[in-house]
Amino acid sequence: MSFPYYLEQREKPEDKVPDDLSIKRQADMDDATGYRPGKGLTNAVNVALLLGQPLLLTGEPGTGKTQLAHSLSWQLGFKKPSPLIFETKSTSTARDLFYSYDTIGRFHAAQLAKLKDEQGQPFKDKPEDFIVYNALGAAILLAAPYEEARKFLPERNSENGDFANDFLASADKAWQRRSVVLIDEIDKAPRDFPNDILNEIENMYFRVAELGNQKIKADEQFRPVVILTSNSEKNLPDAFLRRCVYYNIAFPEIDEMKNIVAKRLESKNHYEETGFGNQGKWIDDALELFYEIRDAELLLVKKPATAELLGWLTAIRRLCAHYIIRAQDLKSKQGVEKVILPTLGVLIKNEGDMTPATEIVNRWAE
Image (cartoon, rainbow, N blue to C red; front, side, top):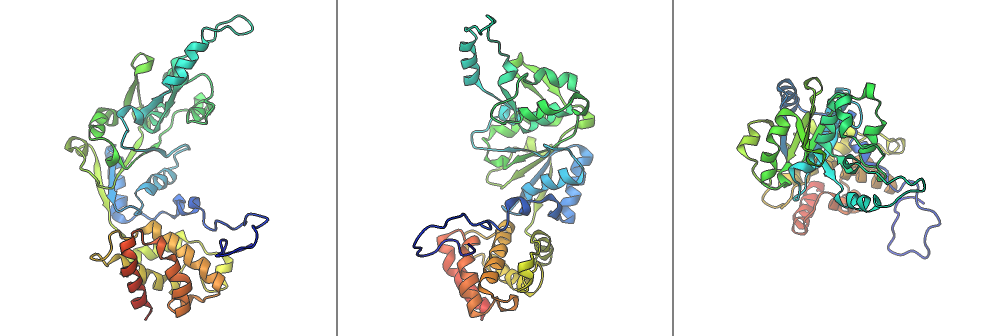
């Protein structure tokens, strides 16, 4: 079975799920080797590394803020699990950035502690067995000497696949390392969150209340690299901003976008047969339309971003291959009706934007 997978009417279900149901995996789109930072962003990263300060990134969603952490970790040769990612939520607290504690699990263990096993020995548990270290906490532990870090580590493997397993799998001789830490969308957090982590981020330490308030600090030689992203939904405190290197990732100009597209959309043999490689006239035509849609500032509620563009171009290539539409015919009546209009939902995410976007498509195809 090949595309189209879903039909208006089907007599019976398919016997087998299509093998090519997903032609472009998200992992391919996020590949660090394909990330292309501009000169300004490269300079900002280097200054942040030079000063040992966090790098705060702003910019439209889809401009590559999150992908920078993967690119930096890859370029500098940081070992996995770098980058360590903390996805900020509206309920996040300062402690969540460093670790989580399974209070319920500890309670259940305390109840079991009253029981005896077959040998008559009491069931034993330790507070550290119920701690899962999150992004910055994990990075600080990995940056500390193993003899210091081991006091904070659980003795038994986590059964739910949490990061604790990676700690326990690390040999003490290969333990100490640097990591990239991504604190994603920090502006989602409560107002006090940035201020509550000021000292910890500046001095790279944290305390674990459940372990007698013990303090663990990163070795300066292995100091984690911190990247923060913000969609500017709320202002961050001045005290926090003073400790960061700031950079706003502007939306790429069309020539820069061509380079991004050429790298991200790897050529496939069955596309080459119809002239749909990762460069050429079809890219020029599609980008022309994309930027016309984006530039309609007075008409569109939400402008499409880079990530949406890449998905849209992938869909265009697949549909053109299916309908045998040549690359040079993307603007034809068949190209518009069978390829462009059916895929507009990848770019347009607001009901009120669909009508003006369709009008722009019709003008573009004339």
